Image 1 (tube, one colour):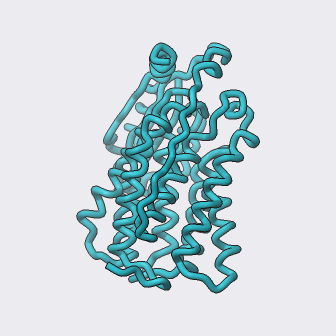
Image 2: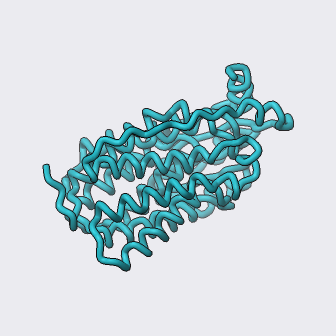
Image 3: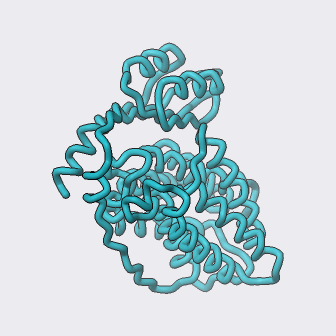
Amino acid sequence: MQLAESRVTGLELKEAYEQAALYLEDHIEELNAMNIFPVPDGDTGINMFLTMKSAVAAMSKAPDMTVAGISSTAARGALLGARGNSGVILSQILKGIAKGLEGKVTFSFRDFTAALHVASEQAYQTVANPVEGTILTVIREVSEAASRIGRRRTSFTRMIMSVTLQAKKTVKRTPEMLPVLKEAGVVDSGAKGLFYVLEGMKDSICRKRITVKTEEKTVQEAISKSKEKTYGFDVQFMIQGENLPVDEIREKVTACGECPLVVGDNTLIRVHVHTVDPDNVLDYARSKGNLLDVVIEDMDRQVQQKNRDK
């Protein structure tokens, strides 16, 4: 199938997302190993892959094959399957892209530029206290690069190649923005994961076989130097109901712990938070609606296991 330079179809977007999931799958171990921030629990790779895998599974049941249909279905699937901090943010990036492509049968590089801008805003709104040197920085700088490129007359292929190159450059700079990464000698795992998403999409859209050289990094020395810390539990779930008070739920979850993420609407909300008291947040959530897909992970045990495996 020949890709037109000026427009991308729904089928081509579907294939691009599928290739992005494959890229994440190929780099699960690498991303897990460099996972330092916000908790060195070694699960960024698997979380981002499972989130993207859920998006891909949803696309197979998309109601239509327009760009709008594919992007919105993928975003919904990603939300339902989102895992971990990085997975939830990735789902919101896909949601932002879907918002930017609403009503589109096909899209141009200018449409995609606008969608990336919405995705950046959506991602930053998701996080109560945004930290630079993370996946957030990558989506923002990619969006800014796309806007600069969009002012020139160019093809979609050149545009996505340029934004992917920007993502690579930004990932490389993350240790300069986040001291904990510099101390560990690694780049941010979520940021690198988003690079692989864009790289996979570029590979698919440009119809090229690209061999990605993985960076072998070790975090053993950094972890051994770090002070003992209690991380508590990684709590994830969805609340289903009617007229759910999204802002109230977000405020309550934020007060319960660290890395709070509350996304969705008044009928279905995805929640993620790090807390030492899972029962507190779960009891509150049950008072608002039906709980689905509850996952509770002991982060202290995960960190200990990661240290033993090194």
